Image (cartoon, rainbow, N blue to C red; front, top):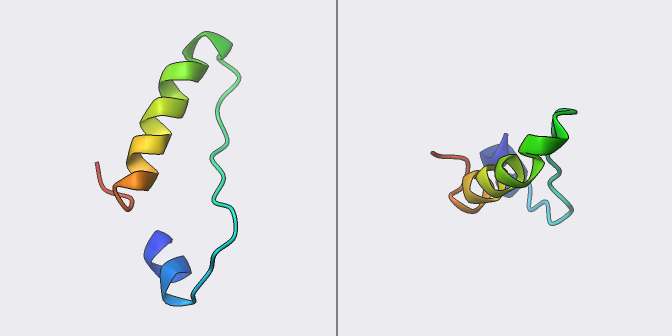
Length: 42
C-alpha cells in the first residue's frame, strides 16, 4: 500500500489506527512509526 501511495505522488497523511488497549498505546505507536519510516518493512 505504501508503494502504491508513493507511486501516485500521494503526499497526504498516513494514519495508523491503534487498538483499544490503552496500556499498549505508546509502544504500538512507536512500532507503527518505525514501520512507516522504514517504508513498510520490519
